[in-house]
Length: 147
Ligand SMILES: Nc1ncnc2c1ncn2[C@@H]1O[C@H](COP(=O)(O)OP(=O)(O)OP(=O)(O)O)[C@@H](O)[C@H]1O
Ligand SMILES: [Mg+2]
Image (tube, rainbow, N blue to C red; front, side):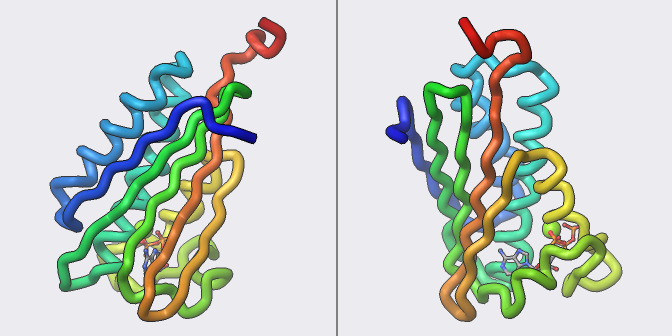
């Protein structure tokens, strides 16, 4: 399926950019006319993915976080959040609720939040190369399916 619109943005892995990332994706997604709740869920999921890239992917170092988003005529958005950081040794394990390598400060719930707020979450990662998290979400308003 061909995207009807597409954007990409990249920024330095500093925590101030977490709110920038959620705002920019929300502004882009707004053209699908989502509900406030759908938009809030998408923003939360994007935040979790971006925070992970900054906190885990790049750890104590600085790097670039890359986001691309594509909109489809079906009302779907696909957001990719990519880092070129340390990578995840065992993706399946990392995605289990409560699993964290972040110690006391982290709950280990980021992936669980992404999964509950999106229709699908796909993770690709290679050690030493980085991680790509792809979020799929339908922003179609109920009742508009046949418009
Ligand atoms: N981009 C990434 N690069 C490297 N490791 C990652 C990345 N994203 C997640 N991880 C690993 O997966 C684990 C689980 O991530 P998740 O977001 O579910 O929990 P958390 O970040 O540890 O805690 P929380 O999100 O609740 O603050 C992390 O602790 C980390 O080990
Ligand atoms: Mg997290």
